[in-house]
Amino acid sequence: MPRHIEQKALLYVDGVNVSFDGFKALNNLSLIMKPGEMQAIIGPNGAGKTTMMDVITGKIRPDSGTVLFRDDIDLTRYDEAAIAKLGIGRKFQKPSVIESLTIFENLELALSGQRGVFQSLFFKLTADQAGRIDEIMALVKLEDRRDTLAGSLSHGQKQWLEIGMLLIQDPDVLLIDEPAAGMTDAETARTAELFRDLAKKYSLVVVEHDMEFIEALDCRVTVLHEGSVLAEGSLAQVKANQKVVEVYLGR
Ligand SMILES: Nc1ncnc2c1ncn2[C@@H]1O[C@H](COP(=O)(O)OP(=O)(O)OP(=O)(O)O)[C@@H](O)[C@H]1O
Image 1: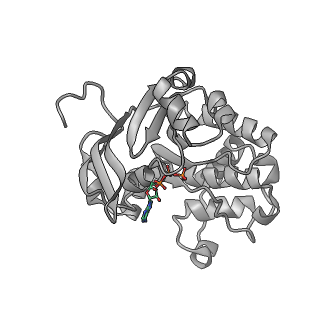
Image 2: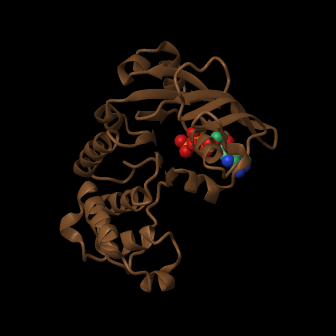
């Protein structure tokens, strides 16, 4: 473990560089995520937010730099599937629930370890597992829609279901990409409430553009710009930061 870290880090990113054809998408990026923390990542288009998530989840291997999970697991040595198994769950912007299955069945499929629809038909749930599905449905506020087909859910409900499908695999960290995009105001408010609940048990990294949503999350905010951290602090602090104001106004 690098000596200058005093507090145990859940995710430790140090000096990470990623170039695409000579263009630096991540430029000496360094940040630390502590256990049990919710952190929002903001920044103008092209700031490197998605690339950062790609590096943490093993989709992209950095050209150089350190990416550690729980202090000593070098994530750059693992592929995407192995990183998911280590306990780092990722939610992409678009929901990818199976529309022809019910909410319960989607969660059952996620619990059965993504073996595929056919195999999961023969997957027998134990009482404990069925109880776990009920628990997750309640957590993501869909308990009254157990037998509803996922295809008939609203966009926001699909997002909650997909978050439930990640949670059922019991991750330590959730990386969530623009959850509020396309949601109604009421859904956005409910999602913020859900995330504040989740933050009591999980560590969350939320990439988002919607400032009202970030305000409602009430968490630490990291601003990325040109592949590096430009500012960090509460939303009020980063909004008052002159460098941040210039970057956003200069868009
Ligand atoms: N596979 C790729 N090939 C070439 N350039 C890429 C690739 N992926 C990303 N980039 C470039 O790297 C930069 C960072 O992109 P990234 O998607 O990480 O930004 P972002 O902060 O997530 O932006 P947005 O808010 O628009 O999603 C952008 O300029 C983008 O065009």
